[in-house]
Image (cartoon, rainbow, N blue to C red):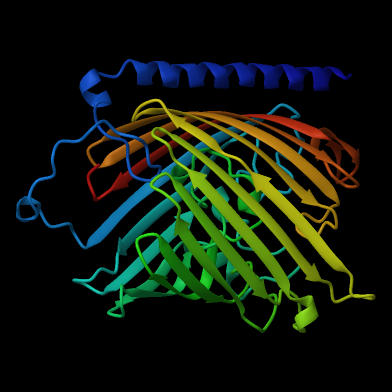
Length: 418
């Protein structure tokens, strides 16, 4: 090994030590906060069990809730990849794809109003920037839509209307949060800092229209008509459609099934349409949340012989809230892409993520610190992750596994007090 390579490894080791010390300092500081501060509630986003509350005040004593809500947040992270890839990239990812350097992964400003019975029109406007806004929403097999690099700065931006039909029919049009998947584009709203493979290979946002209706307190359904699987890709001239059924089995158990169906190639004939099934079961007993998500997809390719391709993936996040501030998450998952339709390579990826979180709410502010480790292993022709050297000019060597240590800091403000 050359003297230069040895020096680089030593620098990497020193950098690892600095990150570990910084992480310990963050959590030590969190543990030293005054007890009065620690007694405040965690922000909305991930439900956690709370102590028994006093009786609710009478309706007439409660202040009216504001119709409009606004806020902002900044998400900073550092992913230490122990393979030290020469191109600083987490291969096959559209979020958290830069490693071994500090990054502003997301900065967001938003304003929104929910459509409710007393004020039936709703709206959302979200502006975003940062590394996580650069690659999501595109397709590896189709050209971008016009002005895609400008449009990527928009998050949920839509209008909605609560129609006085039965229990209330909500119609939403524009760019809205995807009905597919368990995880959000924003790390702030997830159990872990890095998203699962299931998140990066299903839509985070959808462009089109959807309608949802609650048939009862237990059963609800939705239908959507959108421009395609990836909202910033010009895949086909025909729209795609889908539906969702959500059922509350009990106070602790929920089930949701979502179907996507539509053309994702220039050849929009029916045999080439993509079909995706997304099944989610979530169990929330007390302070714990256990969820299971399973996806399976298939489509026929518009090539010689019209071959039908297939992929499947699953995740099992297990989350435990020790109190309103500290929580721990374990997430095993796998992603099998035998035809390379989504990742571009025939590979089977197995991954496991552990995440320790601390939340510190203060009035309308909330600070989240996450220390996380993930292990990814990829097997198959063309699979693997970037290594610390080149095989030839412009060709980075691959290694089958990757260990990553992550430190994330998310600071948010919301007009609604916690």
